[in-house]
Image (cartoon, rainbow, N blue to C red; front, side, top):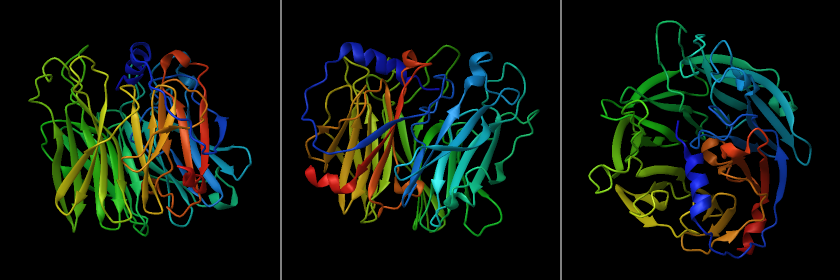
Length: 427
């Protein structure tokens, strides 16, 4: 598991944040339930995942309830954590629904009929020392959620595991998306291959394919995008090289299924960089987005400052035809940790998070302005985006600001933030 919270803590100590204009954009924020324990399965973890969606006046999210690891730190099948679905109607309070066995955070999706889906990794091994990384992948959906019922659900197994002899059949670092035609796509790396499972709305079974085979590296934390033209995936190298040694993150890979065939492209490969031998982590990914013009937009990170291994540089790669046009984004300072994209009325907006603040800017060359969000340490930022099923026509931008700082637990604060899209005219 990646230890970004360590980097966050160091950044807090070594960086001085540049001043920025406070935005006049009005927002609503409220504290929400959260995980008691930081890891290995705090709700903040899984930066590639879909964690919040909106349908009209209703917002859905989930929380990983992990009090079970107070006495045994391993959330295995004998000691599972729970993934709890939550629903908020308008200005009402959050209502908790079903609680399902899990060992890691999952993905929440929304189909075109307003039905909520959860993609959940369920542990199956019961050995006390097993940390919950062996398990099955399950799909839950809530057919009566539009009437307020988030306790009744249906379920099916996407990828099974016998809990005894099979070992790893699906990786815990799962990404998922749902397309406008309600095709659900789920992706994960496994044994130097990259796997995609998908199911059409009227389908009776899940199909499994290799997006990439014999890749020479594991590519994990996939950002998945299901669209009317196919499936796109952005994943990062995550190679284990030995006990007590840091994993290698130096390559970012793009996979795409279009017209029935899979292609794969290297977005960045820094294995030959002069820092590669001394610095295991040189690259990462931050977002994927399909704009109104049908262009794929990728946001990736490079860490090439010789004097500061935590200095993130963000680049947006936009594909026009068969060419990737790459533009480096300005940022507040080296403490920038995540950038998320969202398009409103044909205009791209960028949400940036540092250690404890959130910023917004209009257009790739716009000025960043700080949002008046509650202070959270080690921010992990999630938006309700079209790849999770939230319609681009919704009137609000919904956001989770989750605490990724280990020092804040067990009393970490997490927040839901809502911004009316009409407020963006102030930028």
